[in-house]
Image (cartoon, rainbow, N blue to C red; front, top):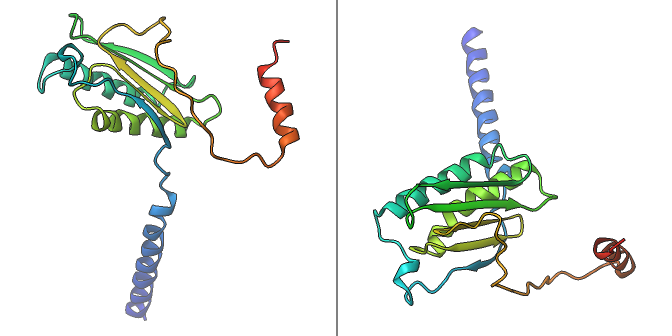
Length: 178
């Protein structure tokens, strides 16, 4: 009898484990929605690029690692960091999450961005990448307390408004100066 129960329990545990494992792809969140990247043309100016295994690349890797790991602790959805101490090899960076996204969505977006940005814009010392949920920016020049007003990119929303009256009311509240 014990052998019989042991076989049934073992099979039940196996079936239970397989069921749980089959849910993993469903539970995993989707990648953030890419919107735009400002990636300067690195073939035009050698001062805007870094070499493999250079001091700047080491500092950039440190910066991206720190931004990624601090995305867990940034309750405000914002964090900045500086890696290195000798210009022009200092890497300045920050992330900013949209104010209405949950902390775990912000974290996932920042972690994804720190990996995606070097794939999309390899070798560049100055990049800003936007996703629907967050943005990530780094540079070899200080970007803190300095607005970047050089880039203007109109971003279109392809979704249709289902309630035009409500949309107009909410839009009016958002842009109201009162």
